[in-house]
Image (cartoon, rainbow, N blue to C red; front, side, top):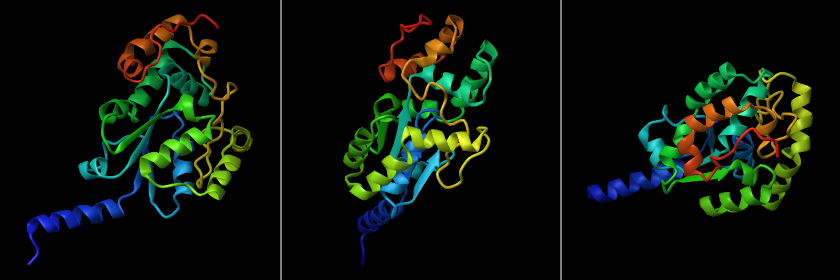
Length: 229
């Protein structure tokens, strides 16, 4: 007769074997790129994309590998405003903060020290596929084939995504296969610290105050201002 311990271990092994890779990030932090890297890099695995872990049952958070991303909150909010082609203002900043608060930003803080969670910084991987590949491969302990890496580089280069995004038009339109949206790439093309070109000092202070814990936890500069570099 099998012992209860054996049954629990067997159940745990099956759970690990059958669980998906979860890609969970707040909007405008490179989540679509990471999801495409995972689904193409590991085609035999199921990859779930979400902007929040709250709706998942606890075992779906504790056991499967979770790949997350963060970004300087000032650039994240600026990008979120620009995708809707709205003018920067106190009202629009607060509106975007509310949306992003409801879509995973605080999960990065809550789960950042969990063993089954990898958090990548947008500034380090968005223009460096090799950085993303190496971090993901080490985390999952599984390599991505070279031909799949080449497909990812070719299909999701900034130029390729920008071309597809322009053809789609508005952000409300998207490709169902790769989830690239219209207006996915702003005129600043994902540059670091471009919030200087978008936000005023009062708007920066709202974001800086609201996301102080995110700035501190992920080593973003809290002394930033609207002074153009």
